[in-house]
Image (cartoon, rainbow, N blue to C red; front, side, top):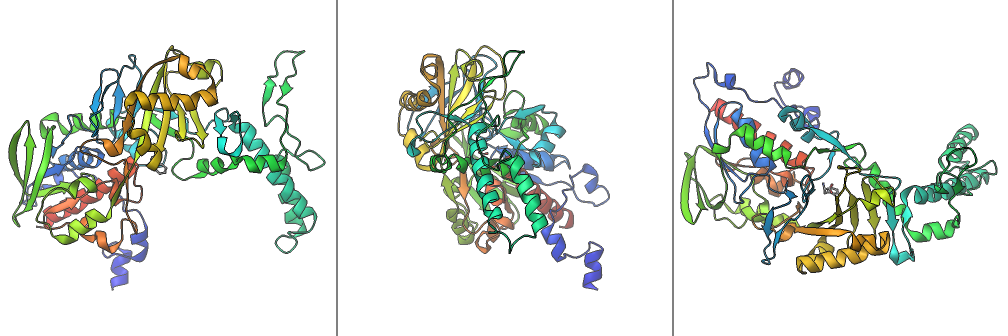
Length: 508
Ligand code: PHE
């Protein structure tokens, strides 16, 4: 009978547990004829998880209040434009000087097509455009392996794929794969390798136009000049350029990727409008959470005043490292779970330039240069092509690299990042610079993390008091998802909390 009920969707089945639960948006009519009404909910945190909680509950008429400690919503979804000011935990105060229309996304900046983030962009009317995550003309620069100048992605790929293909073709030819593949399959493999590695009839890699040109082909009389100096297989593998190629195969990083037009914060801005600004209290830092059995009482400070809000339910959508510092009566299970999840560092610096020299001189339109330097990634902007100015991300780094830049003054960060960039792109990286703005998440008040490490994964037994409600308190955030460090995690975690809370209200 249980199996039959499962087939009818009336009981859980193993398959159902594996499938993503389809989300059913709430509606006011859910309460029609039930004799019950929507409850009052206090949401802690106005980041993506908190805003989504209030937005989705609002569809069924819940009376939500969002408490946000910063002066703006969005949490780690943070876009900086000219005039924006921040002060980090070291006391460094910065005001961005970017020209009108220019911005940097300090937090999330790219959205894969499969993530629910795009559904929210569609639903909320946030226009999107392509974010260039991989560019054949961007550079790779590995100084530690002896590279003295950058190499284009396309050149590096041609060489690595070329030699891998040649070696595999040779191995096949020598019978090394006879046990693995039939003669016909080996023929097919060799045929593939010939194309993938651009091998000639001799089945050897000798360069070719996959690598690129020093003079590009044009009108009659200009057949083009291929890039010279094809390195040996040994040089290619020693250079370590191949280490970056698997990135674009990642389920969450494969092109096409997208970004909202005009900055990632168009998402929290749209959510904030949809919820209603009157439901959101900014500058409101939570100082106590008390589950009273019949309701929840939350204490917070706002404008130097201590205030208390009473609600039927509470959704804690703050980062776990912040929640762990707030006194509560939810028990040691909650506290132990929160403390097990540790914060990670990441940082970015926006370098605003007077000209788009990377487009003009290097012909790089968007995409990422990968380095073994402490700046790690350098991002070319995916908007404003052919405009006058542009903002490059001069570092997007993590962990120790992010922390060591954090210790410098904003000017010191700029100087160190520019010195690295000059090695890769030349003097214009310094001479064309107009302004800079750096952002370090571990040093950001009220957040103190870029993302989190959740040992054992979000379904580990120790996080049960966070995944299930504890009394009348629910939790939500990317840190309770399998896509930590993505807005998708925050959206889907909020949906899960909203679904559970609503089911409880309907049945209570
Ligand atoms: N989502 C962030 C990014 O795209 C952080 C992240 C990086 C998450 C790599 C997972 C993998 O950069």
